[in-house]
Image (tube, rainbow, N blue to C red; front, side, top):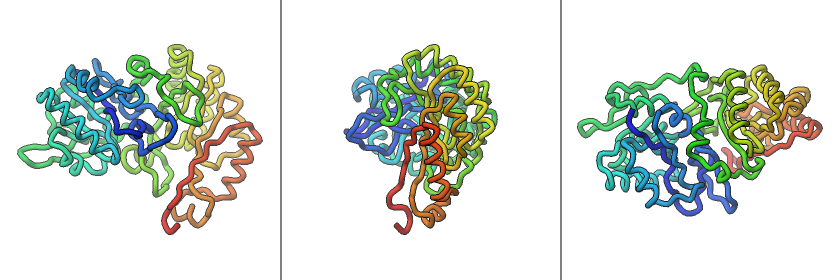
Length: 350
């Protein structure tokens, strides 16, 4: 297994790390989200390291000095950061030409050809769900044998067949040890969560069909694939032990409440652990469910209301009406659950 660096490069001024580590955000306040999409493949690759430069104030010189120690560098990119990330990749290659560099992320998944053409320094692109793609590259397998990979060969770009989405999510190792080893968790802030917080996934994909949403349509898919409740509870117990300073855990699943029987079982187990937690939810839960979550440690729902106009909600296939949203909101207030609502301005025809 080659030594592999999973990298969120130094960013341009004012660009925060953000969701999935490379979010389209420029803010006036300090706000950093965990590099969740890099942490998971890093947990799969022995002797790897996760270097998240923006929140740790790691500049380009320190980044390049660290990158020299690795045979492979895997960069999580995004549309607004692609140009900057290409410059970092080129600097890594210039300092150590034999380094193999791969790009992953939603932008690379949707536009693999364009991403490869963006820089001569990019050797490969991982499409869709890229965890095991990264591991197989680190193992030294021939590029031609790796599903989900796009790369250059004899002056042309080759796209291997798609990789199947992971079915057994319990097969993925926990990210807890990667966080402990490579991240200073106090560096991560988000305005609506108690500090310090930790964000992680208990599942991927979302059955909803919202037209605007990035992750289900690019990487995760529309089937909610989940870790077992016991697997989640065991990692939470472990995180509680190794991160005693954490005040809140956030489940970043696109819609944690999409599978309510499982969500209730996880909540029951978290209640026994005595941890404070929050999650993404649609605005369609009933009062009894909300109250049950609250009684078992839930503090906050992150809710995508998106719009207060029912015609707009239909147009974007939100699947929730304003009447449902009002009932949900009142029930959360009644149960004592905090809501961080998100909205979109400029939806189609607005």
